[in-house]
Image (cartoon, rainbow, N blue to C red; front, side, top):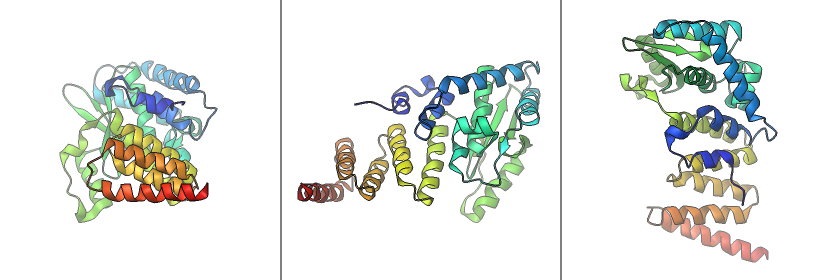
Amino acid sequence: MTFHPFDLLMELQTDQIRLDCAALHLARDAYPTLNVGRYLRKLDALAEQVADQRPGLAANLRYLAMQRVLVSEHGLRGNEKDYYAPENCYLNRVLDLGRGMPITLSMIWIEVGRRLKWPVAGVALPGHFIVRFDDPERFVLADPFYDGRTLSIDECQELVENGFGNQLSFSTDFLKPVGTRAVLLRLLRNLRNIYLSRNELPQLANILRRLAAIEPTNGRHLQELAAVCCRLGDMRGACAHLELYLHRSPHAHDSPLVRRNLKQLQAALVARN
């Protein structure tokens, strides 16, 4: 059995997972001939150009240096015309085209910052992903989707309230940096929703496999994957995913229902033979 490189990375401790490598290996589902090294070198080159700005230690000056290189010089910004195109979620295509979703553009800023050993992190606002630059005295919030503009806390609150109305109260906890797994999980959820809405089942199945790798204790991914396999006519695959779910969560509240579904699938397989 061959193991997907993204799935293998998810077995590491979070601090050992490089965001750029994980995102590029994820993209190999959609772009099988992708040259990971080529895109890592692109990120290296961007970081070198930002370093050449010599901005010093202040968060605001580092932000300005990165915004100048990534946006003003390289034109990296949001794809507002075709926001839900799947390629907006794949790091290689965003680097190729200069357009992407908030989270993939933010990943470029984060990875350039990591190369420079700057404290640049993702901020998972509900409904919109941004980045923050920190120094001992301040932090700067920036929106890579909209030309890297800076955001005040009040503007972040407005973003959340405009998106969710009275259903969600803004909290400054939303502005805390998030780690690598949280970034990848949000990216995968975006892709899952996009492929589900487009009814692109083979691509959806791949994303659900990656979700099951990053969240092995979340049985919903395996159950949804089993359902997608059934729709694709892969009954054996569906059985395997339900069996794995029961192995991981034998005492889950819905395990009796899953066992019944598994027995029905197994009976259908026998009837086929």
